[in-house]
Length: 269
Ligand SMILES: Nc1ncnc2c1ncn2[C@@H]1O[C@H](COP(=O)(O)OP(=O)(O)OP(=O)(O)O)[C@@H](O)[C@H]1O
Image (cartoon, rainbow, N blue to C red; front, side, top):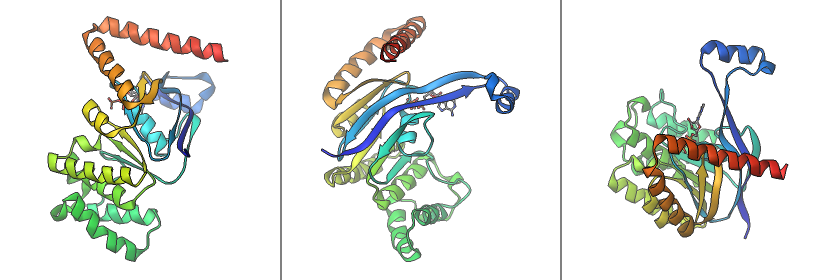
């Protein structure tokens, strides 16, 4: 089976500064290393077959959105790389929409940037507006939209553009039930067309219905990658245990996971 997305040793490092002056000093004198290092992703690798639907799971802050953004090319990895076959679209609340522009201007700008002609844009525009169900508000600035409206607009543009690889980050959880159903049907259509999709959600039942494979992230590391049923079962059990832990036990757990990761890495090096 041909590979669609290859995530190779991807890490994402952020610098956390206590004061604005630290950020400035770090820029002026990078050798001195001001601020605290924080890894949102640590050496994550996996590859995805063409047509697979992959769920990204993990507790809050485990790195799901960071990974989704890196695969979509919205933010760069600090090290490692992602090789994708075809064009990638990310659908997330707020992703890729300019708040100052109206809904219509956002559609036009996005389609222009993707290289569509003005005639094609004219044809696609009405379909996008209709699918997004924001007809009356389409000429209002996006900053006046609710999060549901933004997400509907983002979703409608991305699916109409017909990308090879689609990444959906929590965007469906903000819409109403009817729109969520319409979006779900659209995604099933994409699935039947054999497109590769990534799906970020906290809903295990949605994941179970929709995904073939799961990447389970834990404190920025890839804990497991495998078939959906088996990984989701383990994740559900983990969530039950994790929920019962005290704050201190959770901190210890995190410490142990990262220690294990560091020693495994040392063995490889
Ligand atoms: N721009 C940034 N600067 C500093 N830290 C960041 C930045 N973006 C994300 N992080 C941190 O990286 C970690 C991973 O964030 P991310 O949003 O990818 O997690 P997530 O798994 O999607 O979380 P959630 O389920 O809560 O949405 C978090 O601890 C977050 O605070």
